[in-house]
Length: 135
Image 1 (cartoon, one colour):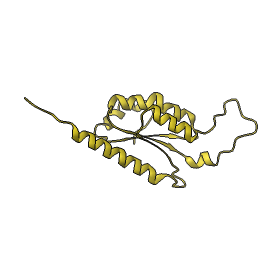
Image 2: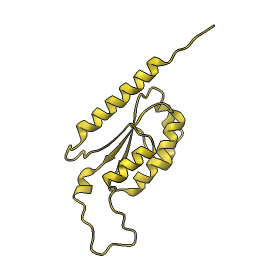
Image 3: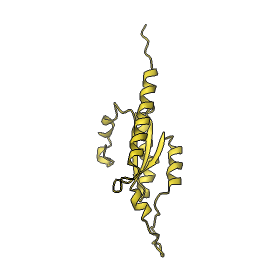
Image 4: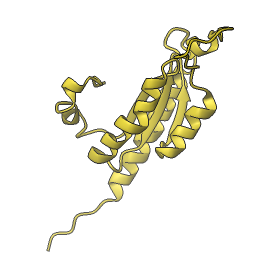
C-alpha cells in the first residue's frame, strides 16, 4: 500500500522491487481517481514494473449502487464510474483483471483476493521461465 500524494513520488518506487502483482485501486464515486489510473498510475507502474500484472480495482461499490442522480445536476456533476467504463479502462491499461468491491458491505472482496492471487501466480510463472547464462 503506497500513498498517492506527490510528496511520496520519489519514495514510492522503493516499495516496488519485489512485487509480483499490483492492485491499482480507484473510487467508483470519484472520477478524478479513475482518470489518475490511466495518466498517473499505469505509466508509473509500467516504468518500474514492466512485466508485473496489474489488477484494476474499483472500490466503494456500495456508494455507486446507492447513488441517486439529482434532478437538477450541478455544473460540476460527475456520475459514478460504470462497470463498463471500468472494464474499458482495464483493457486500455492491459490489466490482467478488473474487479469491483465494497469494504463496507464486503461485496466483491473475495474476487479481489482471487484476482490478486491469480495475477501473482502468473507473474511468478513468468519469472521462473527467465534464464541467465554466464559464459
